[in-house]
Length: 151
Image (cartoon, helix red, strand yellow):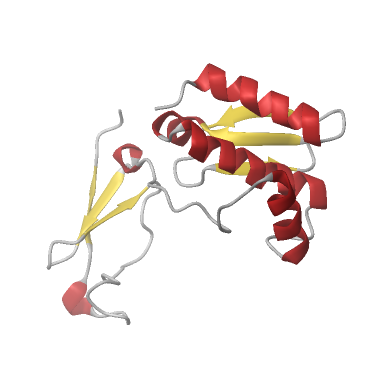
């Protein structure tokens, strides 16, 4: 729903306003997480796939979330100092985004006997039982995986 060029311009404007010189913005190919802060390279990234499907307000909040990380440093995580910095910037969200993942890009699709569907972006390496059907591993709820052809 958002235009990637518009979000890129907003991101760079927010970075220029709130962060020291040297921080840049880029898109990445994440399919589950909305954004990331890369301290070593002084770069904030947003998922190209998720940014395009989220609205402008959601993307703005994700940018504020990541800028708060850049302000407080890598050791802080989602602690009190991060939350205080995020709130000062105008961030109103939680620790993690609750939006959807780009499941249509998932190469592996699993189904349990009850019909619950799971998505994985990497090949499953061990047996898994459905967490919605049983809290513990149970062969009666074993997930059967199938591979989608590459897009």
